[in-house]
Length: 223
Image 1 (tube, one colour):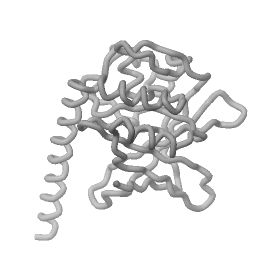
Image 2: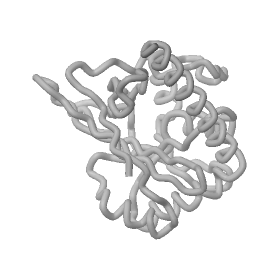
Image 3: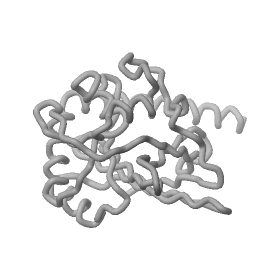
């Protein structure tokens, strides 16, 4: 009986997650650019040089839009960012801090980093924190896989390494946003040479730029 109940709970969680993700996708398609413009203005108000990252960058470059099946907005910032100022500015523009994902390490693991998520009108903005790899033109961040049904707030940690030569302006739906200056190289590194071909089944584990971080876990802290 206990096994059956666990199976039913797992299926219910997955159903609820899919329903939630559908609502996020719908909100993003309807009101995403308006909310993103507020985010852009908030970051400009504290002179924070964010850039479009991951799926949002891909959509901007490939489709000049948000990806039709995406659930959130992805941006990157430097680990040297003044996050207190950023959070204060985002609050002033109507955003609420939703969660933080902390990276916890053991043994000889020297990784550092975290991820922040803010929300407004059912639209999520994930802020990925990037650090430089000394002596190279590459940067790294982390993303997490919530791939288990037993530990809701613990995740597998993936390291993402991409080439990065700075940021440039790019007009995205009427807003002069920041993108990696080498965005073509950046996207090829993460999504592969054929990033211009849409693939709704693509997952971060398929990326040539991704590897599992040993001796590390991601811990979700809700607010």
